[in-house]
Length: 576
Image (cartoon, helix red, strand yellow):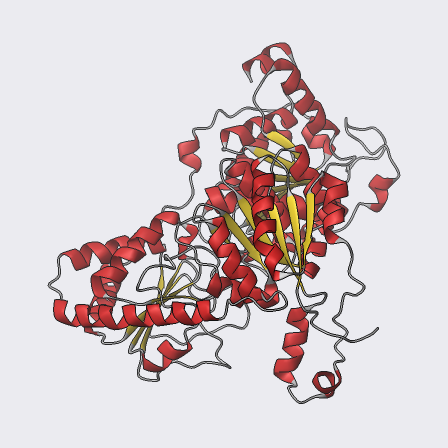
């Protein structure tokens, strides 16, 4: 940085680069355009001078770029940068910005905007026809619903403050992506290094429970006879898992993971009681919800009317969702790790009814064992591949250290139930509903954890949404191999299931008319093979599944991505 200022003109683009490095950004996932000459020139200068800059990961599609940044942040907690091209590049982010926002994951998105001078008044002025049609009234409106903060650089003199502020907001709970725009003219200006002390640009400190709230929760836990804890993403902070285990064991509290986004509680723990809260809701006298967007669907399940319900979350009212409510006795806006630490410390000083706790533990342990007997009974080998058999085999092959990304949509409940995860940081979902996250996310996770195996699970439709040509090209170029397991039922199973639920005796169900089939099936693995030298394997016979999985794991260990295309029974026989 000093050499840049001594021997070269120090531009705002240089200041941008230095700010990202200082803020802890390791990667820029980039898809550039005609708005990037100042930035590209700065990158080239830094390379020639041997000065630090984030590693540039070229992403041929923006969906892959932001999904990769999301995956990296899900594992590390650290925001990465995504650089896109003006309005059209912002549009190409597509559903990935929805996923990052709904998952509450920090990301720093920089987009160009069309130059604002036309006649050479400033360096960086418009010099191409495309810059006129890419000039829009309100570019930020494309992503405004899905960002915590947005702004446009108006002078190169304060670009570092904007970077630090954006990343500070992105990292503050509830976390999320931020969006900064910059035209070429301010990026070409003389820059300014403010030599910031990053300790002064930190995120908001974790918030715990007020004393009165802490007393209320502890008293309710101690008084309850049939308490239950429900969580979905407590494991976003991996340290929270240990605190939840401690609380659960101290009072013999059953834990239900509903719509598991993260590994929140070990599946093999005797107090893990699965993923369906229905039976517990009917009997519970205390329901403690910790970090969950939707602990149950009100139209399908209702808790015991006498149950006391406590909701603890950094966003307990889901303020970004217009229609949402789970009526509860108390809502606590708190960081789950900080709150659990307080609760556990308080209970350490409290006399407990050890006999009651021991009886409850014994009863719950028996329920846990029964649950797993029922789960494994459904994993028997049949004439065709079934999702239960696939997941049971996968569970036995991958081991506890492998990082699993799950985007199987219609099979998600089966995968969640059968694929036990016992170590924090080994299970992730997108947190949103825009399909195609798994591909870029697997790249980001592998860059963050190069020593780990990464296995991504998806459906055939989701695979297509992941922009596989871009995904596997990036994975191959940047040595981020992972294995994809496609649950290929040759159709949109989730859409078909929705029709069956709403019209169980309707014309669509009786006549198999859903318009959800993807037939004839594409050779999905060949796409990855052509784009990124991936090993493509197709399996339809149950006896071939385990050997194929083992072959795939060996291939990723050797540095090659794998696509394992599993042909399950088609969701529909409709001829279109």
